[in-house]
Amino acid sequence: MQFLLTKATVLTHPHSPSPRPDEASRYSKPRIALHWLSAAIILWATFSGFGVALLEPDDPFRQWVESFNPQITSLFIPFFAWRLWLAIKAHPSRASSTTQERLASAAHKAIYAAVSGVLITGVLMMSHPVTLLALVPLPQLIHSKIALMQLHELHHVLCAILAGLVALHLAAVVMHQVQGRSVLGRMTGR
Image 1 (cartoon, rainbow, N blue to C red):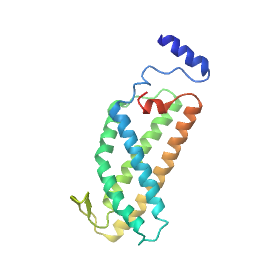
Image 2 (cartoon, one colour; image 1 turned 45 degrees about the horizontal axis):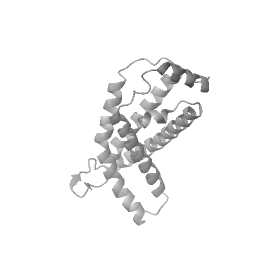
Image 3 (cartoon, rainbow, N blue to C red; image 1 turned 45 degrees about the vertical axis):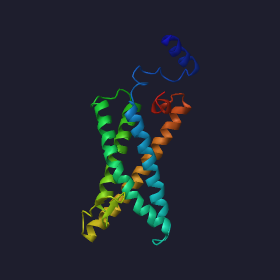
Image 4 (tube, one colour; image 1 turned 180 degrees about the vertical axis):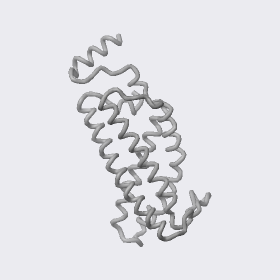
């Protein structure tokens, strides 16, 4: 039966390679859930963060976003660390065989690095203590105004790089869908 399904796939999409046996099961349920959690938080923080920059500093919505985003992204840090650990564990330094696989691997590593940089600079650049969920105080770690300004600039550069990488990632998903290779199917557990 599997042979017939593979042949049918090749016949309907003659230019797409046959799926490798490990492609359908490469992502565990925790990795899939953490991917979508990451996507939601990264997209929210990107659009809201860049969006409120267009508003006046005393605008109530801007103030709410600037209070909410450090909290939601701080809560996200352990989930991102778990996601990173699962990704490293799933692909222990094996050499990718094709140019496309090497490019995909490099792009994913760049996304992980950019997210790490955004989260680290976000925590370090807090210019005042933040109370997480009105329960847990997050202290201001750096008090030098010059260092905070530099971190703020680096954070914005990393956010822009991450936004570009996410756009590239989404373009690759669309390209794969058009070519008949559903990466969305793998990321929804199908």
